[in-house]
Length: 230
Image (cartoon, rainbow, N blue to C red):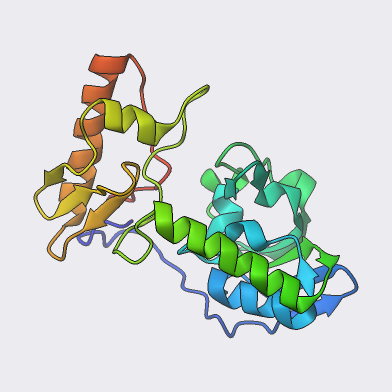
């Protein structure tokens, strides 16, 4: 999320058409701007399994690589083979072992690089079975998370030994509003823009939540979303 007044940073937008998907045996290569829904369609087209766990997430491949997206015991670090990265000075493929993957983190959190392509190690399966798993996962997500609302996904990382959503509920934050934004009454770790929410309201609300949760629970919740300011 970017402060709308920010003018001193450089931003790069990669087109979903930057590169075409390529299947080479069990390896699948796609562009960094490919959305999750597009990725699921590509996997079904090539009958490749292993990425269904990210079905339904409102994100793109590059962002999910950078944050090492994960759920249900699986992470992108389990399936990424290598990544094509562009900096100001070079364009090269880097192996997954060099990307410093951790819990919701990677080397991209400290290096100003752009993920333009990613290669995944998958397994062949029947397209119909892949489609059915994708539909089941999406249905499960929609029943638990406000995926059809305007959100940026999970707000906070899960602290060691617990869940951010549970902590937020116990602190009375589920459904609470602040200006034009609200913590979802479906899942407390999702912030919903009700139509008029601003960057500053999001940033202030996150800071308020962190302060109050630390006071009540003694736990400092670490944001999963990245806020860019000037």
